[in-house]
Length: 126
Image: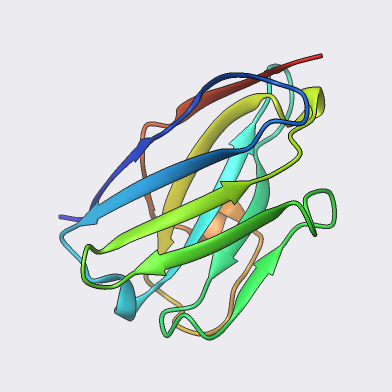
């Protein structure tokens, strides 16, 4: 059984950085695409960034391009989301998810990700 546990969320001020972590168990990250999503109150869950199984490819949403970066640690089987220059509109619950159907193609559709963590809250004050 694949399990994901996010950590690293919290309350920060606009402009501050934050790093989220996603611990993956039950499946090595070198076998699947892993993505970060977020969901703000009253809004649909949206794709943030994803990383391919090889780690050679990453993809981020336009709204976070240049501020967020995704990376992985094969030895620890963990995925990270480095967030810089945070804005109040980044406030959301952040989830990591595994797409076991893809290895190198990073898709933004949340419906294609079949294992999810419980999420970690990120709140950015102005």
